[in-house]
Amino acid sequence: EAQVTQNPRYLITVTGKKLTVTCSQNMNHEYMSWYRQDPGLGLRQIYYSMNVEVTDKGDVPEGYKVSRKEKRNFPLILESPSPNQTSLYFCASSLTSNQPQHFGDGTRLSIL
Amino acid sequence: QKEVEQDPGPLSVPEGAIVSLNCTYSNSAFQYFMWYRQYSRKGPELLMYTYSSGNKEDGRFTAQVDKSSKYISLFIRDSQPSDSATYLCAMIERTGGFKTIFGAGTRLFVKA
Image 1 (cartoon, rainbow over the protein chains, first blue to last red):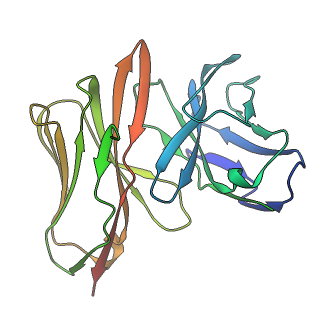
Image 2 (image 1 turned 180 degrees about the vertical axis):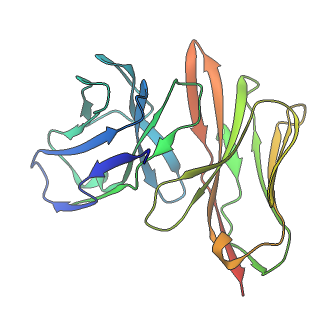
């Protein structure tokens, strides 16, 4: 089954404790992206990757890091999480950047 | 002003009604247009994808794009309680590369 898998689905943690949200896709997609979804603001892009070893900032990259060492994986790293990063996060992928994206089921992060 | 404007609702209709969901946009560089459906605790899933003005039909769903008015619509015929979800419009613009911009979403409730 074609899918985008995120882990964990839920996480409650404390300010400053580094965390990583993993994302994996099995569709051989070149383009991958991370979004955060907040009430009234919709989906905002954090980082994206056009292909292996090619990443770039989206609209709200501050406080986040990403890497793309393999085509299928695109982890999101919060080096020093803060409460304003409490949100619902989605990983997405598509064959190319001008194609509709497939989304994972989301990771709900709460930073206390 | 946001690039993509979408009424957040909520929109409540009786089962069997025709539903009309709309988005307006200001950027003439948008080339591709999509509608996603998002159920609670799930990621957005693609419903419709089009790149030209006019109508595209898929079962009970019709997507309409009017590039001259910068306006897109999604019509749902014979609405069902299972259609209750948040509907996101999305548009892809070409700016060097390609970038997807999402509306904030409209919450729809279909009452049995």
